[in-house]
Length: 346
Image (cartoon, rainbow, N blue to C red; front, top):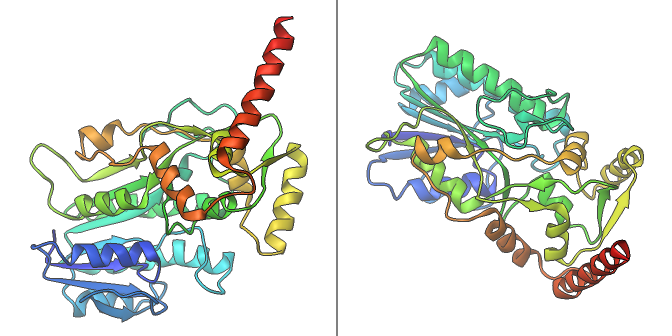
């Protein structure tokens, strides 16, 4: 790994965990932790710099600390504190532009790692069963975090062309879950009753936050023998779960809503501040999304420790019991399904 590593987005739990973890790597001389707000958690022995990556001052931070590796984790779909959607977009897009501009001018930068999302593929009714890193989306995201991620990746590709001497790695994470997950999907799954789209049961993939930390470490260091950690990689746990399976395992009843009315439900939930039930999340909960992780294993040389089901189980334990015990809810659903099957046969 580079001797001096700069990490953005450290005020969030995931960023803080990564900062604390890489300090234990013997090849790391110093870690520079950057965010616009002071973190409420500890950062170990890292040098915290309060700086807004949307401002040109980030270039001074790179120069003053002789940074040679940048891990950009400040690309997110949730606001920190009182910031709204406008602030999130500015940090995601404008912040990335400023950071890449600073990296382009710095002769010491040797490696750039960017935390992205599989949401760049969108969610549409005619999507392929499985997306690979080279599969074009059927419908480009029209707004929200997904559109931000598409724009961010576009700027990163432009940087890679202008600085071919810098090793660039883009990690497209599936929905990140775990005990400390703070994503919009985690907020949705924490509702006492889950509104779903009538007639749809989407396939979902998850990646555990522990695996996120591990794969970021691999991407941030020199590649191991017979591997390559430059390029774009999908990151997800093995297997898929249906939304109905997720609800049963959480012990949370579902309320099917007709597709035209889902938007009204989402607006109501956003208005009362319960969860960010955005249009992109509605599309995910309608059509789902599954990605291939072949390149992650064969090229990057990383195999997630947690499957999608194991990741969700860890998340479910951290959220406590739902309104209905999972065994009772699952048994009720199975009995209804058995009765329907029996009637169809007769």
